[in-house]
Image 1 (cartoon, rainbow, N blue to C red):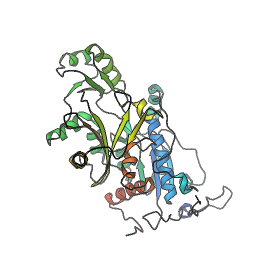
Image 2 (tube, rainbow, N blue to C red):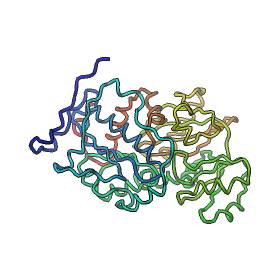
Image 3 (tube, rainbow, N blue to C red):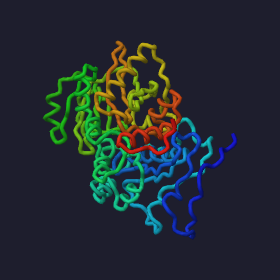
Image 4 (cartoon, rainbow, N blue to C red):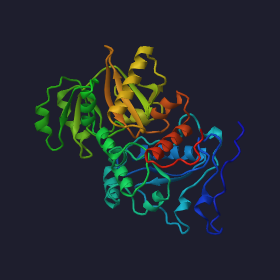
Length: 401
């Protein structure tokens, strides 16, 4: 395949004269919906157990946005920047990327083993407000918008967003309050259940009260035990023997969170992406594992995903409708979300959880869901950016009709 003509300017040589900010911005690529490029900071990494997944997502998004024509800074929130003597504009890079190098789903590194929690705690202690390494704020301030891809309590819980709001910065994704709600699986289950949406029965085990709270368990087994807040199925266990519940709860509370015990619902896993009022295709993760674990998600060859899922038209319409309802009920609005459901053998659709800061690694369901509806990955990333700017009341210069 012939490489597309470059739509990018050369980055200044270190020996060149001092340059103005607009000189490092590329010209927009023909596939962009904008007639003027943006300066975008992709915030990734973080100091929590989902660090590697976040880095994988952030690298993919940065590449896609550069290919469309934007100047992008890849910002690791747990890593202080290398000092530069020409100003923060040098952090915003463009890249010569051939069209064949941008597949339908993103390409980026994948790491299976979660990072060491003790090492991350040391990093967290040095961060500003527990979310940002010293020296990164000037880069974020230089951006038109910050694309948030930090996970865990930093991004999915809304702490990074609070930091960005404190400094008056525009960012992608929902508000901190919405993130705080969706990160807490118990609270979000309570909200959707109040609107008549089915969800597995649950029992909360508080960290530090394990024996006491397990004595009050009345749910019949088998069970799913997982952190009451978190993602990537880290700390999740299927338990058949009541004697194994204490160990499963200790694993779920490893990051100082409470443990959530849910009734195990047999059936098919379904996950669906939403962006604003648009709901994309239904994805079905398939694996030989009984539970779609962290290892199954991120180890090559351990799982595959069928998109669109092989469902009846009625079931497809039903799960897409419920996804849209959950998206709006939880207040996610114009931002992203990925909802997870279980289709039980009796036909029930059971809501499990939703994530407003979904992963976009090579094996992530969100970009697959959108791609199946004809939305290429670079287009998806740019749409997310444009919606964030509009939500913040900022004009989107040069938006093509």
